[in-house]
Amino acid sequence: MQETNLELFPVAEPAVDIVPGRKLTAKAAALYAAPHDHFETSAVEELRLGFDGIAGDFHGGTTRRSGGREPWYPRGTEMRNERQLSLVAADELAIIAQRMGLEEIKPEWIGANLVVEGVPQLSMLSAGSLLFFKGGVTLKVDGQNKPCRVAGQSIAEHVGAADHNATALLFPREAKRLRGLVAWVEKPGVIRAGEEISIRVPEQWIYQA
Image 1 (cartoon, rainbow, N blue to C red):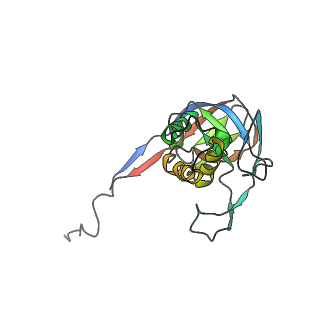
Image 2 (image 1 turned 90 degrees about the horizontal axis):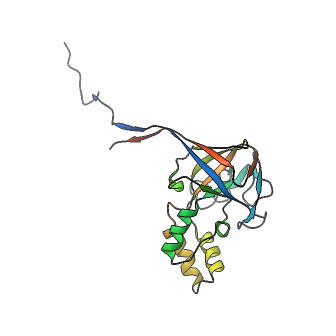
Image 3 (image 1 turned 90 degrees about the vertical axis):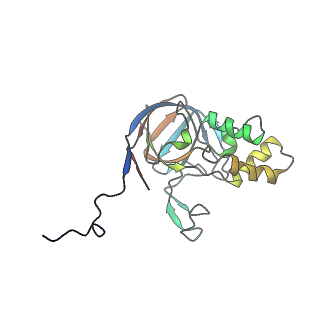
């Protein structure tokens, strides 16, 4: 009988850890929208959402132009807009503020649209998670919102920093994995302040080296 060459046909593939999906509950603690010409937001009682995001919002649109976050495209390439809404958590903003030596960082300073309450470590919520709002809206998480110098500059201006440039550069470093999430509209409708949210986190898998 011919022997099998185990080097050509390994007995087992690399191990994979499966993390089961789960459900979470949360609340839309506060809502914000931005004018069409600036990324900073202002508090509102409701957000009217279409498939293109918030009507008239700075980050609205079904498509957007690529930038520094997408080095695989020439800057300015038209692509799908998966960054229609910015989601943050008050407890994570408080940690960033403490690290930066500030009393507070307000959601509107960094262009947030939604403050989510009740999810521990919101910024670590898996890409692909679905947020079902009681009023009927569904948002889909694209991933973490990487902190940038532009938001840092806004913070520096609002707190009256002695060195604007130093504060602007400090934010990306101290806000890493605490900046919140970006999401897009899967099912349109109206979100109202205080609304309940049911979150479905998808199954995850991790390859073992």
